[in-house]
Length: 420
Image (cartoon, rainbow, N blue to C red):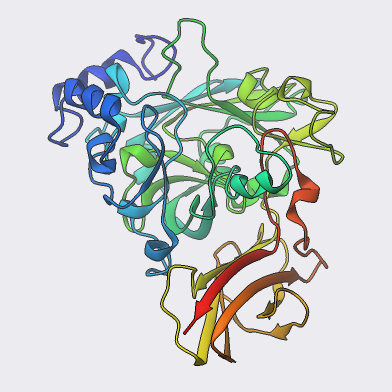
């Protein structure tokens, strides 16, 4: 990457080019973006191109959740309804990120350094010239389902239901192939790979969104430097032009706007690695552990997904008539073992029936399930639980995993429907 940099994120050369084309083709000026962020009413006025039915959790940051009524309409989630979780305001120099259009830039580059034989720079052109592979995988916010912890005690942050979720197709170059192609073999002292992106805190000394992965982590074998989302260049708001994708890992670990990879002896000291997005090693109760208590010894990063399943239909808002009804939804995990069963209850968990499970070709994608049954008139509490080949399953009481950050909810999904 060019040495001329504006701040510690995107290079000045890249910024000037982006700024000069008006937020990369989106007909929205930085001033308009700021006004929209202040108003925070219409999702499409905050992030250009998103569906206007998106649920706004944080207008300033453009954080949005997908209504399940929209999510269930597509097996592959379109970019317009894909949930959004960025960490810094898309304004000022970063206003170009506030759109579902792809960044119109060709001179993007990624620095590879740290404990390597020789630091190198990989250009976007280099990546486009390499063999491309596809990864169909679930993308999920670590805070997805956070609102359900409130049954024990509310955890701070966006009160996500189940719409911090998408099933998408990524396309790009395997991480291993990239590193082999530029001959950056790490020294014997390197233990961690750290990834950084072009987004940055507006505060002068604000934390940078940096993530680290141990080099022995087998998940890196499946990682790619993605250039496309659902067959098109990655939208700016979703991390284009290059995003590190590690299938089966929570969204924060899939670094957006990738512009730096570094081999290190230790994981990054960035608060986003050492304090934020961490899961406690042992269960804690409200009042006994706070967000300030997290450290490298008592917690670990939110890496791979916990097994999960969600009811897509019927939802509480749906009109359901007595008689034959199809209960359906999706299930997923980290891809390390096949999901072997999905059971559904229509009486609040007193009895369970086996649902028909349709496994996707990709181990990291969501898998559809359905159960055809009869529901008489009245109120019914539907529940669903998934299990995989390793015996991992969902807890009947998801609040048992309560944590002060509200991460990694995977309790049995429950929907109450009124049948007429």
